[in-house]
Image 1 (cartoon, one colour):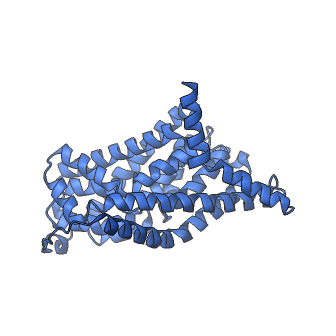
Image 2 (cartoon, helix red, strand yellow):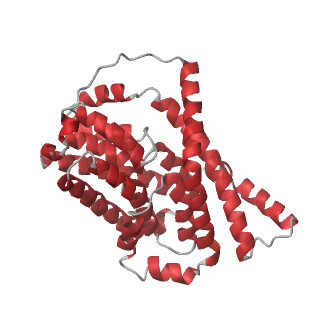
Amino acid sequence: MNSIKAVWDFFQNEILGMSWLSRLIGNILRSAGLDTDGKLGGSIHFFIYDIIKIMVLLCFLIFIISYIQSFFPPERSKQIIGKFHGVGANIISALLGTVTPFCSCSSIPLFIGFTSAGLPLGVTFSFLISSPMVDLGSLLLLMSIFGWKVAVIYVLVGLIIAVLGGTLIEKLHLENQVEEYILNEKQIDTPQEELHIKDRIKYALTEVRDTAKYVFPFVLIGVGIGAVIHNFIPGEFIITLLGDNNPFGVILATVAGIPLYADIFGTIPIAEALLSKGALLGVVLSFMMAVTTLSLPSMIMLRKAVKPKLLGIFIAICVVGIIVVGYFFNLIGAYII
């Protein structure tokens, strides 16, 4: 049993967490005369290490997920979801959301396509919630920072929010709250072309290039903010604002995350820095969920597809779900980290 634990710890710390890279960068910076225990040296160390670690993991994850995604083009996804009914359809839709694009804005065109194809509205919203919140990339990235227990529970509760949210929207019969141009859009069935392995690899490599190019600026900003929090903002301030002493920390973090726009890769370094300064786990994860699911740009895009009433209900469902999850993680955080 001890040997299994040792192997897992090595995998989590040295492979996913890349502790060896942190030590290497620290040695290089110290040999260059920088004090990595000081504020400036520590910030530079945090910045270089997190940029390299996140981009390496990012490229690896995008390749794997894009290869899997090549088996689920929009037409095939619609066919798969269409075979299920009731809550089963919501579950399948939420699961398909885990192998689709990494941010909420890129998920909305697929949501529009599914809705115009005649899929139940609640089913398409289960997809829209899960796609940015619980993609497969978040599983490994969270595992590299917070451990496998946090990562698995985060994905599970995210899927639960997606299924329950979609089911509630379905029960409210809000089809008349979708913009008419989407309901009236004609769908053209395109024949499925079976890709060969070389084609799938080429597609995955193209997605690596395009997504990395798109995500890199957000990673730079996120790591920069994380480096400042990690080394320049006093831990006492973070604890007062987002620690045990503030019962409204989860709500504050959720509201603060909504105006921002990033994906899971941009929010990870900020979350890592906040947690290291004493912020509660539930507060940190609520912030991440709010940024990735309810960013202001994605809500503006979604408003073009749905009317204000449905948009408001969608936001309310996500906010309540995120806040509940945040307080849940606050309660169990000490037992799973």
